[in-house]
Amino acid sequence: MTDTATRPRTRSRMRRLLSVTCAAVLAAGGTVIASSDAWAEADRTVSSNTTGTHNGYYFSFWKDSGDASVTLRADGRYSSSWSSSTNNWVGGKGWATGSRRTVTYSGSYSPSGNSYLALYGWTRNPLIEYYVVENFGTYNPSTGATRMGSVTTDGGTYDIYRTQRVNQPSIDGTATFYQYWSVRQSNRTGGTITTANHFDAWARAGLNLGTSWAYQIMATEGYQSSGSSDITVSEGGTTTPTTGPTQAPGNCTATLSAGETFGDRFNLNVAVSNTSTWVVTLGLGSGQTLQNSWNAAVTGTSGTITARPNGNGNTFGITVMANGNWNWPTVTCQTG
Image 1 (cartoon, one colour):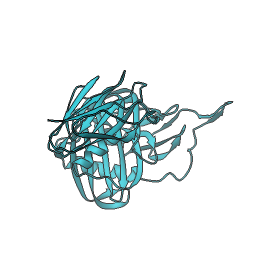
Image 2 (cartoon, one colour; image 1 turned 90 degrees about the horizontal axis):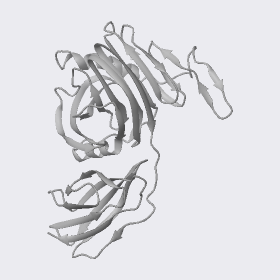
Image 3 (cartoon, one colour; image 1 turned 30 degrees about the vertical axis):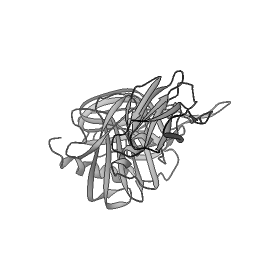
Image 4 (cartoon, one colour; image 1 turned 90 degrees about the vertical axis):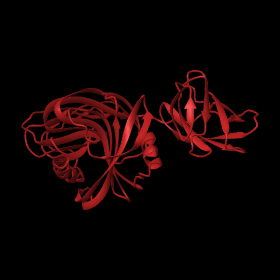
């Protein structure tokens, strides 16, 4: 890949084929094995364009040439390999319907050349194509895109970008639509993707997703390259905090309210009243750590943390890693 124009044209064919709705259950070659407590499908290797379900997960595979293939394995695991004879290919496992889910993945990713590993999906109303890029080879897929800011979440910082496709193939045929990107500054192959943190950061930058979700997969892609991957993807559960907010006395008021809750963390909204120059002190509980914040200047990551205005008004938010402690922090407010 030497320029930004060639890449999207190649990807446009991939996107059209990725959107094909599965019209049958598994093709020949997948053996169903009965057990006393579940049905499990045997490993299945696909090397031609198809979508479907396997062991409870949605999958998609597409290539335009060459010998790329994906082997669908237990649960959310898949492995892939491709050679330089393949011009462009993409495949992965995930969900037929996207959401603000917490995605956990692990495995290995070994590209040689232009390739990337990303959580990838679409929405409708409006039509949006989105990526959370965790790792890539020799080419950053956001090259040439418009930078819209950044978000720090899940132990790293992601740069936020927007691109536009004009009269190009999509899941709804030829259309004009935006692409939203979060590209991790420090590549990794394994961890948690808190999708809500990306979606909320995009919204704060004016990048709003649609109201109707299409598919969402953890995808490996290669373009005029070679390599392999072995990825397992799953979804985290949800837990509700066991206690409500506590408000200690102060000379202004900071009120906590619940945000999104995930398998290992929860979001809180903080609304300050009676002053616009405030210092909010939050006392995190045992084992808890600050994982993310927005719309305030926040210092500290455990124990006592403080927040001050940063020009975004009197409402801000935090994400707390629970580590088994789902109690909300104590909160006090003083004028600054």
